[in-house]
Length: 90
Image 1: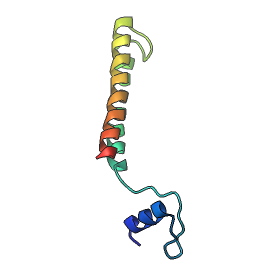
Image 2: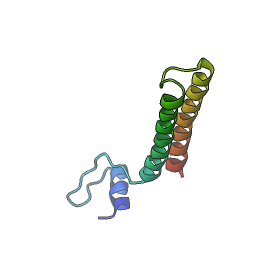
Image 3: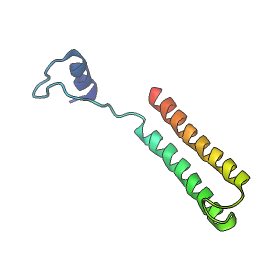
Image 4: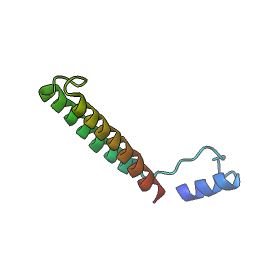
């Protein structure tokens, strides 16, 4: 049965065949969201590896660089949120 028909039945509260209204989530931008997450996660792991090797540990090293890297990681988080919202809304 077509997902649009099931979704329409859900909105209208109708029973379609043996399918009664239920919580319906149409497939959408999950793949794009996972792609964005994976790219951001790889960049994050690369940054943490760099910090471990060259900066004296993930949490150690120069405080100025630590703050810069923290800001960069927050930026990655914002990129993920904005990217997920944009792909799910289109």
